[in-house]
Image: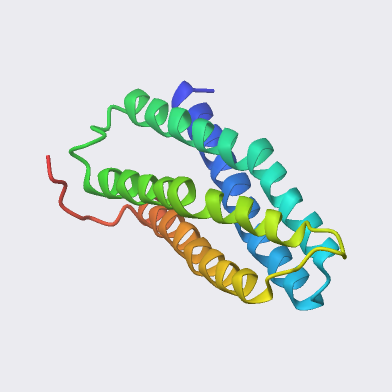
Length: 161
């Protein structure tokens, strides 16, 4: 087996795990929210945060290494190939959204819902945070999905380099 094929396989596997984790996280949190049960919501958010440490963050690293290794092994210029360049831009945008918006919102949501029954639960603040989390989560999902589509279809976009 050529290294190119091996690197590509690793890259694609990491993309599947990465996107699958994002999609299932959004799905399960939406389901938990519908229960209106704070312990269920807290458990779900805690699990999402844990799954990101186990799957999403390592996925980012493996996607990056696998993708770069594939392109280098295949002799494909990373920044001068439009579909690779714009996929990197979209993937990076997803990472920025996760770091600057989603991760802080997740911690805030977990803290809001993980209060004892005796404490005052700020439902309006929770609702506001949850809506923001959903919207930013959608951005964090759409950008790598668009990158995946570009990579698979090799959409002929111009590079900036």
